[in-house]
Length: 298
Image (cartoon, rainbow, N blue to C red; front, side):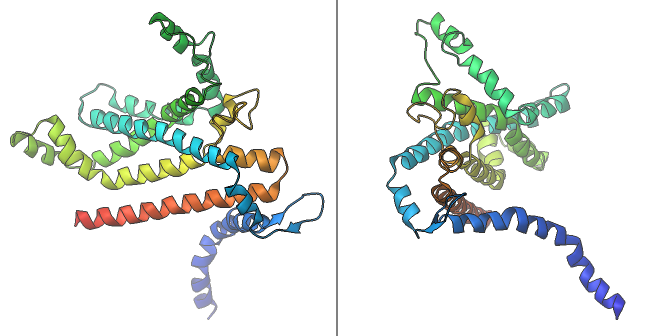
């Protein structure tokens, strides 16, 4: 009887640490955020229940819509080029006969493991108005100096470039791993039938990578919605607003400003809940797209 109970309990005991850690550091903070969003929360005074007033105030706040617009803009500028470049690099590494191919593939992860703070410092120097390498190149073709940090499109392009540099290698390896699972015989048969490189890429590579492409699109979207460190470090004079006119302030940075800058924890929690709903919406979109592609594959 004891052995029977032990055998039944053992599997649950093995997986229990994960669920305990998730409940303490994941589920509880999430539920508590929903709770705080319903209050005018002062950490050192009384908590006043306000219901959905924080959300009503949020949707009437032009700063929220500005942060949402900046977040979407940075996501578009970073995700689309990143995925296209990664797809091209993966196709090249999969077909080209390169010496030290393993070294090239490993080097793709160097930007990913580099500190975001160090990356920001380097790119801030490259995009600097007075001494940046990019403005020096623009000067050679007769274009005056551009203050990337203080302009809306410039600061967003700068942040998007940092995101592209950091995540392209990681995405490339995901595509490359999927490409290597495709049989070489398919490409050889296509070559015999007269299909060139472009037709092989269009009719073999792209359809075979559909599930991975959907996965990278959605994960990049979720990551883009939560981008925080890059815009925080771009503007040293006003880091919480990412500029004097909030030209590159994202949703997470707006949350940080309201919650930990102005100590409006209830309002900040409402921003977090709204961001959570957006992330869930994109996760649901991922499920729907994945189901559709699986049905098409059949």
